[in-house]
Length: 291
Image 1: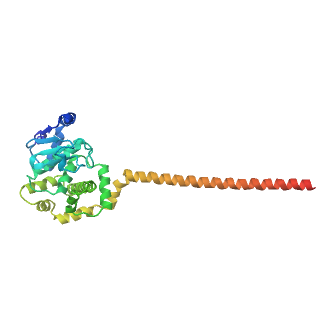
Image 2: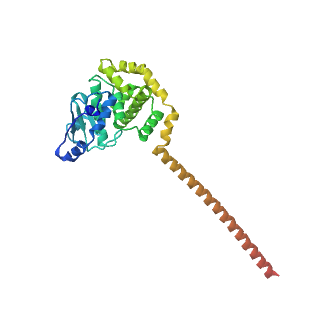
Image 3: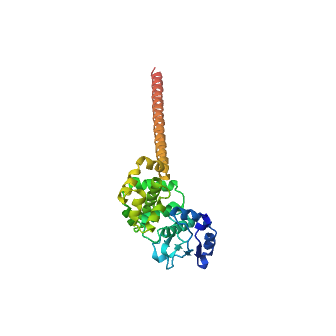
C-alpha cells in the first residue's frame, strides 16, 4: 500500500501567541508518520487528527499533571501538546511528543477502540517515537538491575504515580515492547492489535500471538534480561564514566601524596645528614682549638 495513503492528516490549532510553534509543527514532514501506521497495523490514514497547542493555564492543562508535555484522546482523534513545558523522558523535543501522541491515536484505531493496557500503549508509542538509543538502554539497564521485578499490572500502576515512577514505567514498558518485537517479530504488536480489534481480550490476543500466557510472557521477559547484557550499556553510561574519572583522579591524588611523602623523607634524610656533617665539623674545630 502506498505510504502516502497511510499518512494521517493533522489539523493544528493554536492561540495567537503560539503562532511560531504552529508554523514549526506544520512544517513537520508528515511522511514520517507513515512508519507509525505501518508498525501498529493501520492500513489507512483515517480521519484527520485535531492537534491542540495549549497553554499551562488552559483547561486542557488542568486535566493532567504539570510534568506532562502532551496527551492523546484516541476515540476523539485528539492530541494536546504543551509547548511551554520542557519535554522530559521519554521525549527530547516537541516533535517527539507529537509522534508519541499520534502513535497513541493510531494504536486506538488499530485496536478499534478496544481496551489495551497502558504498558503496551506506552511501550509501542515509544518504539515508534524514535530509535532506541544508548541512553534508553542505559536507563533500562539501571531499572532492571537495581529495581524490583514488576508485573505488567504494576507497571501500569506506576504511570498513575509521580513523575519519577512514571519515567520508570516508560523505561520498562519500552523494554518489554522491544523484547516482544525481538522475540516474536517486528509485526507482533500489530498482530496483537488485530486480534484485539476482532473482539478478543488483550490477554487472549497476546497469548494467541506469542503462544504464551501473559504470566509466562512476563516471566520470560525478566528471564531474558541477563546481567551481562545489561552491564554493557551501563558500563558506557555517563554515570559510570564519571565514576571512572573520579576513581582515576583519586588514584592520581594518592600517587601524588606518596611521591610527596617520598620527597619529604628524602629531604628529612638529607637534612639529618647535613646536621650530622655540621656537628662533625664543629667537633673538629673544637679539637683543633684544644690542641
